[in-house]
Image 1 (cartoon, rainbow, N blue to C red):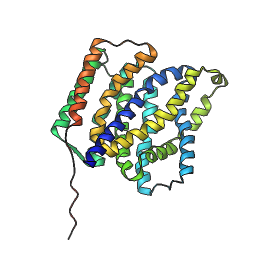
Image 2: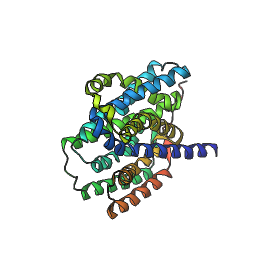
Image 3: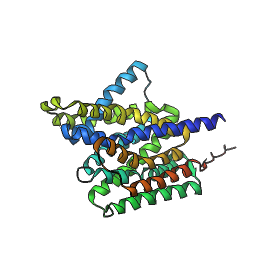
Image 4: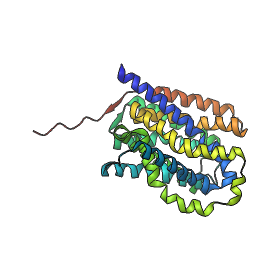
Length: 300
């Protein structure tokens, strides 16, 4: 019973993480108008690095082991470097809805890497739910006329693969290093690569940006880049990487919902229908059994 409670709590933490991530694109849309793509896309990591450095020092956290450092490099490459850079470039030429739809393929990427890195074996029921969710996302993309791949599409797909690896590796590492420690150390590893380009793009007139732009940027730095990952990696560590990753299917529709609330974009009936199908696939996948690879027996 205790294990079941832990897994359910992990699912709730995963949902909190997804909700926080879903506010990222609307916040970016507001902030980028005043601060520019480089400062918004990369500067949030620099700001987050200052926050996590203070936390790590106050808590006197010990340095990761060499083996853990290798995993942290993978997490940093995906969650801190690769995904922000690729998506920032892609979203210069693609609409927000396009990015939201393709990012919805993250559960499949995460599950695939979870099998390789986390030793999880999803059941047939789990894969059926993933296929249903993926087909719904593809239908939605085709309905929007987004079926033709561009270079920006390839960048988004590469970003999804890279982040899927990062999620799986981070979820696995969270079990031994701690959820917030994983993203904290990853931010510190990635931030130095961003300082120079961010510094070159800072302008004095950015100080006069309106309050909503500053709130959006602070949200991106504190929540999207740090606290959301704490909830997300904690959820995967407690509820299982593959199972919690199913909740990501809700993310594109939460993004569209928040865009409607904060950016006055409209929601169509077709979007609602697809959202219902995706939610159904999440419920189906949530209850699907996920087994672990058996450890090799000891040699005599």
